[in-house]
Length: 265
Ligand SMILES: C[S@@+](CC[C@H](N)C(=O)[O-])C[C@H]1O[C@@H](n2cnc3c(N)ncnc32)[C@H](O)[C@@H]1O
Image (cartoon, rainbow, N blue to C red; front, side, top):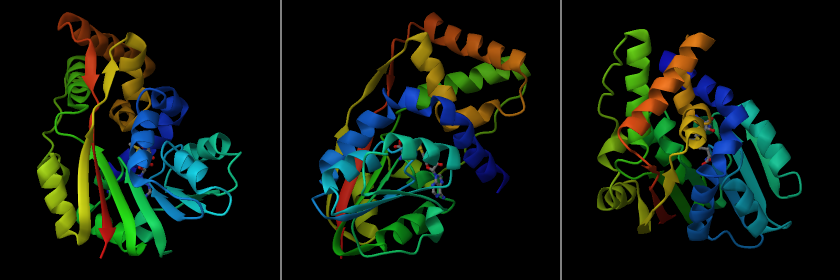
């Protein structure tokens, strides 16, 4: 529970830089997802774990004023930005809620971009989201492909260890680490009861400028790792983290996703 609260606060803290990073990361992934979920005029869409609207906004543009997009997130600071970003879209409705307690249903399309692995029980959370779609409706989950974003996380951990002297605990096997390749992801979606499952890879590479590399920390859930550090320590972490990219000559970060779409039986 403590870890969950940290993660939720992490996204609140990330709000300031979320959209700055989003131009390079969240928005291209959201657009790619919506290209595959194909919201149509007049459809009802649930965008779960919506953040500032990287996929909810393109969906709302597509469904038009006769459709509706319920965009749900636990982070009020992110939702405030979504309301600003989508102010021109009458179909977009922002709701602050834990998606695992969202009971409305009969959606034509349920999409959850880079959110399902944050749910406390990922399989139960995914089932709950699938049940929000009408029978025959489309359901989409977007997750990181194996290896994506891992390098930045390792370098951040290394920098934290060098600055604080405290080694990070090993992440114990999360379900998402077993389904983060195309075939395994497709099998998992079928096990959850989806039909006509299609998984595609959406390649994305982030150039490692100092600005973007640090935004990857401050504009994402990684920012929670800085909790408890003072400003001077955070600055040292930043310097160490950026130095590690430079020393190893790393010029790009893999941000490839898997986009899985199926229909509810
Ligand atoms: C990596 S962000 C992705 C945001 C957005 N889908 C995008 O692609 O830009 C994950 C989001 O999941 C949200 N989240 C995590 N757990 C949640 C829950 N139980 N209910 C609703 N939102 C949740 C976080 O607040 C955060 O906005």
